[in-house]
Amino acid sequence: MRSADLGTLTTTADGRYQLRFERRLAHSPARVWRGITESGQLKSWFPMLVEFDLTPGAKVRFDMPDATIRRLGLAPGAPGTTGRGEMTQVDPPHLLEYTWDGEILRWELSPDGDGGCLLVFTNVFDDRDTAIPAASGWHAGLEVLAAVLDDRPVTWSAWDRADELTPAYTATVG
View 1 (cartoon, helix red, strand yellow):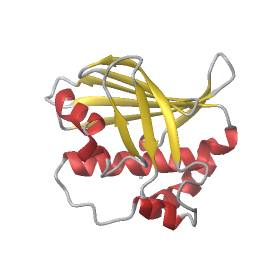
View 2 (tube, rainbow, N blue to C red; view 1 turned 180 degrees about the vertical axis):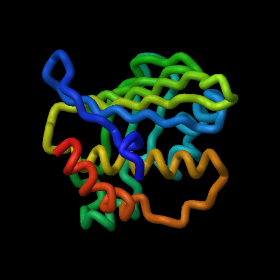
View 3 (cartoon, rainbow, N blue to C red; view 1 turned 90 degrees about the vertical axis):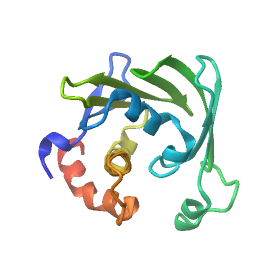
């Protein structure tokens, strides 16, 4: 893994924490947009099942998949298995931003001049202790997203991949 692939952690002006990831993808912003907004594509890589309307102010609902609930040993309906948010900014196919239980998820897509795009993803949150697991999880999820966009089969577990990435993130953001 190249260190350039690792996300970075900074502190925001208001004292929150921001994870930032950059990925160059061999797909147009319109194609990547579908990967981050269409439910059929989201369920292959996003950590929750997401329901939303791409209208600023619209409510967003997050539900933990049953397999994840079982993996984590949670009871259905336990705290953390559902979430709420709001769509805050939408400019297809360039900008998508919404909240998730107080966190901010922001996706910026720009053409790279070679037919692909630069994806910049940021996650803003309050609890510093979530930085390493969040970084490892988002990194693994973005790898799955890239595979899905490339029509490559995903033959690995994103959970296992996140576990593999944890030492690298412990060293860089820990």
